[in-house]
Image (cartoon, rainbow, N blue to C red; front, side, top):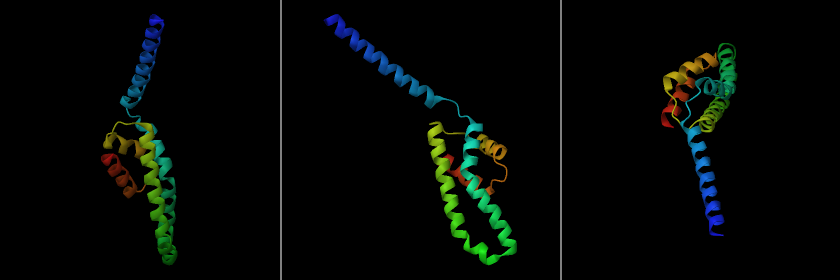
Length: 126
């Protein structure tokens, strides 16, 4: 009976330690900048589309442009929250801002400079 109990305890410790080491492997994993660039680009799409719409309205209809500003701010906040969540779900490592900026520019044509800067600030804060 004592041998059986010792074996059960040993197997439980072995199982727990293997689960812990798997979690550590994921958290120490290198950052996949292409993945993050793609994920952040998807998050930024509503803001990019709104930015393009605002550019057009600014030239053609100032009143409509001004009425869309609040909506644009809300879309930008949603995009930033999405980026934070994507980074949190992907890695616990802090990405190199320069490498992430390059990946975002590559993956996300048309991303507004202000949006790119805001994403970089978030990465620095995380």
